[in-house]
Every structure is written in structure tokens, then in C-alpha cells.
Image 1 (tube, rainbow, N blue to C red):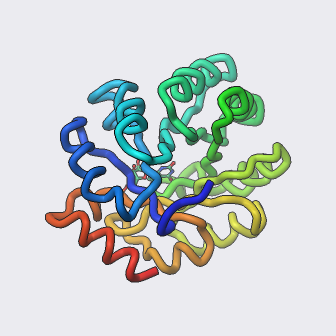
Image 2: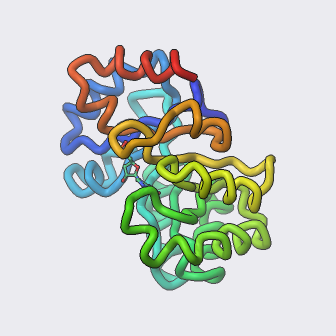
Length: 214
Ligand code: XMP
């Protein structure tokens, strides 16, 4: 995946009106949007289709898919049918569940991002100790895309070392959660940024300010 300006907007607003207004303001400087449960639960999976039809964006659905393989397949099928270019799935559920997502992505010529370690403090409790093994599992499976935290640069660096230089890493946690965009992009291919942009009084300027730091 190629990401313009190496920034992905996390579009966690709660209605399509706001989502569309933000996208209109930022479409010159962005080409990749991440849609998660907030907007999807508020407006339905049609939110993904509408963004795809209205804008020239790639859409990554952050559904952190974490179920048995049969259910993962169905979740991915619906997401890709709605027009998503990629989906984020959890790795802790194991190889068969991740493989189900990868197989479904293959049917749609879409992509899977494997979530290794999350960016919030609570991830240290259970997920961190298994994150390297999750990343190694992804490498063994031939997964090309990963999610790793901008909030713990040492962990992002370690996960980069495991997945290798050719893997594509997207990294949440820049801005509101404390991560630094420039440092993050030393190891990640793109930074995911949400509230620091869409909650700003001037979202265009907020985005441009991040771009100027890169
Ligand atoms: P903010 O507002 O904190 O938004 O800039 C960050 C976005 O990223 C999501 N998020 C994650 N997604 N793995 C993921 O797949 C993570 O570790 C992770 N941490 C944050 C968050 O839901 C929001 O959309």
C-alpha cells in the first residue's frame, strides 16, 4: 500500500455529515482513511461504501477482527463487499483465524493488516509479552502489513526488526496518545492520526503541521 504524506486519518467521528466535511477539507493532502467501529456502528457499513464512492481514498477498516475462522471470513467478506481496501485483524487469536482473513482478502484483491501490540497503556498487561510471537507468526504466514505502536518507539523498532524492512507498518498513537510523528516514521511506513486532526478547530492546518514535521 502507498500512503500519501505517510499519514492515515483515523475517521472516528460519529456521523456521515462530519465525516464528509472532514474528508472534503483534507482530501488534497491525504489518500488513506481508517474507519473503525465508531463511525461504522453509528452509520452502518454504508459509511465505508459512501466514503469510497465520494472520495478517492483507500479505506482501511479497523475492525480488529478476533473471532474463529468461520466468523472472521464472514466479517471480512462483508467489509470487503462494502468496498474496504484493507482490514485490521488481531493476531492473538492465532494462525487459523488470521489465515481466514487473509484468504478472504485474497478473494477481493484486498489487504490484511496484522495487529501485533496495541498503542494504549493496557496493552502492556497481556498483549505486549506475545507481540513478538504474533509478528513472527505473521512473517511465517507471509503477511506483508502490520500495525505496531507509535507510543512505544522501542517496541515499534523491535517489531520492525522482526517483520523486516519490506513489510508495511502503520502506527497509531501519534498526537493525542503522545507519539511523535517523525520518530514514528523512522520505523513505520505511515502514522495513523485521529483526534489531533479531526478535533482541531482547523483540521487542515493540524494535518499540514504534522506533514511539515516529517
Ligand atoms: P487517535 O485519536 O488516538 O486515534 O489519534 C488512533 C486511532 O487508532 C486506533 N488505534 C489502534 N488501532 N491498533 C489498532 O489497530 C492499535 O494498537 C491501536 N491504537 C489505537 C484507535 O481506535 C483510533 O482509531
